[in-house]
Length: 302
Image (tube, rainbow, N blue to C red; front, side):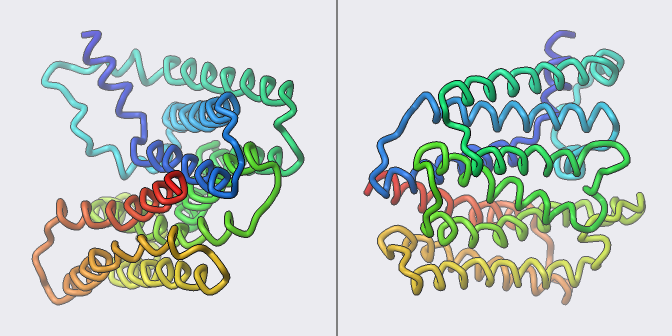
């Protein structure tokens, strides 16, 4: 029974979003290191812990208030057991207690960062934006997850803020490398969110879940997805024109064949092509996470 309860609690964790936060945070640290900044590993760990604790706190809080953060992406994960799950233990106060504990941990880390003198005005603004982004998505009465802009808020919160926070904690000020390196990832992540919601489109339509994909329709949603893919790689090319080192960003274009195949395959669905979700999902994950890995690796291993 204890194992079943643990599994049921794990289903409230959004693994893709947590991995996104960690990967983008490492990317921001890598940019600071590339620019010659020595890494303060205490700030490194404190900043990452703050992001993850606040993120987890909002996930459990949203599930407690029945305003789940991207519930459609994870409700089909195989966490169910043949035994009767302990729903009363996890659906009531347990989720709230876990959420409050995570927020308390984030507050403690905030105090530690302030005591170390690491919280500048820019850093405080980024931390406030990260807090506000999740607040708008899960708090009852303000939840924008199903407003049609929830995907945009999600991508901005997860893709822009973690690397920027990591960079400011280490480097201390803005640098154009930061903007040139992370903004192309925003449309790629938005494309990932759209595609991961595509398998649940019919269910969301029946339940009148007004996310972006339902509002525009699946055909226009695929078009928007493909447009975001092209926009991301186009922005990487623009970054090179504005002086972003080719030895860092050039490896990203190794992913372009997989991205083009994904775009071509999705464009065939309207004509009745067979839907192979494992392949589509794998390609979508590769199209976003492999560029992040290649950017982080090339900046860390300069």
